[in-house]
Each structure stands twice: as structure tokens, then as C-alpha cells.
Image 1 (cartoon, rainbow, N blue to C red):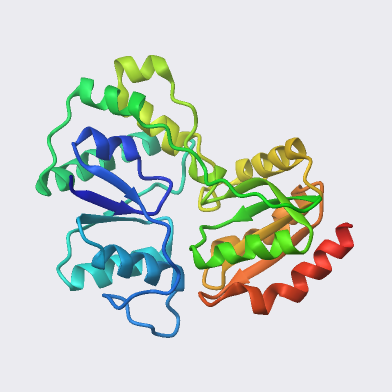
Image 2 (cartoon, rainbow, N blue to C red; image 1 turned 90 degrees about the vertical axis):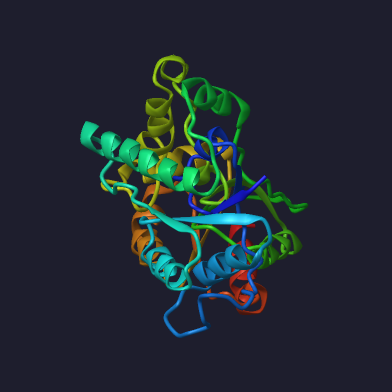
Length: 291
């Protein structure tokens, strides 16, 4: 079965399944292979790793990127310059209006034409409904053997960035909540089953666009409310925010998130290299302060 590679939480896996294709949400390795995106200054290493890995892995028939990230928009340009099958999904930044929902639905229809061009089948209502029932996306699970409960938030992370989880465990931490884009911020809301049966495309739009909080939403007050509630419920003693140096969206939100949270926040920037050496002392000091 042909794979469709993507990374954004705003791309419905169910929509790809309904077309008879395999959704392949990539967590990049971190050390980017050679590919369309060169190792140039000003290029996000996460975007480069995702695009180059997607473009070089076997069985990937097409790549979906979204407009929620300027770097991913730039990645789309690199892909199209190489003539690789790719699609740029326009996710409306505003999300509390009927027109925004309709725009998202129209993007699903446009994506459908792209998927059909790659060999997918045109889905009917039953196929969409069955795909919604079949798929059950879940966040990544992280843990640790330490005694201090911690929460994560922020953007996506590569497999190389997972070394920070080991460092947190080594310094006495235990991850009780992963509210990053690789975790809860990447999981859609519970589907409206009434709409699943009567208007499944509407159900997709509601779950992925209308109720999924994110740093790119305008307004994004729900993100801060969501994080504060999740951290409180998890009983975490502190929060570590992970973001790439090139991500202005997450960087700009750090002061507001810190103010909204009931516990201390440590802001960690990632640069595509091994994150442990440059962050070991900071994480150790943060853990000592919580202990």
C-alpha cells in the first residue's frame, strides 16, 4: 500500500485511510539524510529532517505539508522544485467561525483530488465513516524512573530529541504528561458521532480543526487554558517546553504559557544537534529547584 507522509496534527489520518492509502506520520530521525533541503543557514532542522526523510524513504507516494509553519511552507517549495508529489494543506489560522470550517472542508476536498491522483480511490460516505471508526490516533508515550513528576509541552521533536527524556530520567524526573505536538497537542478531539453518521467530512473538520488547540491558532487562548488544566490534572511539579530555535510561534508564546501555568516552566530550545550536552546543566538546575 502506498504511504502518504505527513507531520502536522491538522492532517486527518482517517481521510488518507478512506482513500485506500496508508497514513505515515513521520517522527524524523533528527540527523537529516541528503535530500531536497540543503543544510543551509536559516533552515529549521526539524523541517529539513522531515522533508528529506520523506523524500528518500521507500513506498512514500506523496508528502503533505501544512501552512501552520512558515518553515514547512518553505519545505514545500524545495519539494516541488524537485518534482516530488507533494501537497500544501491550507489550515485556516482563525478557527471560531463557520467560514473557517468550510474552508477546511474545501481543503479536504482539494487534498482528495491529490490523493486520487496518486492512486487512491474516491471515498464515499461509508468509506469515510469506516475510516473514522478504524483509526484511533494516540499520543506518544514517555515516562521515566525518577521521583519528580514533570510535564512536556511545545512543538514536535525528532527521535534524536528523545535523548532529553533519558536525561530527565537520569536527573530524577518522571514524565507524567506529554502535551507537545508529538503528544496530546497532536491528537484530535473526540469525534461527534452524530456527524460521523450523517456528515463525516464535517466530523473530520470539527475534530481536527475546530477543537484541536495549537500555538498557530488565532486566537490561541484555548492553548493556554488547555495546558494549565492538563498540568494541574497531571500533578506535575514543573513543565519543560521544547521548541526549535526557528519556531517564532512557540518562542513568542513562552511568557504567556509561563504565566498561565501553576508550576515553574523551563524553556529549552533545540537546534537539530544532540540536545543533551548543551542542556544538561540547565535541566539539572531545574530539577534541583523543584526537588
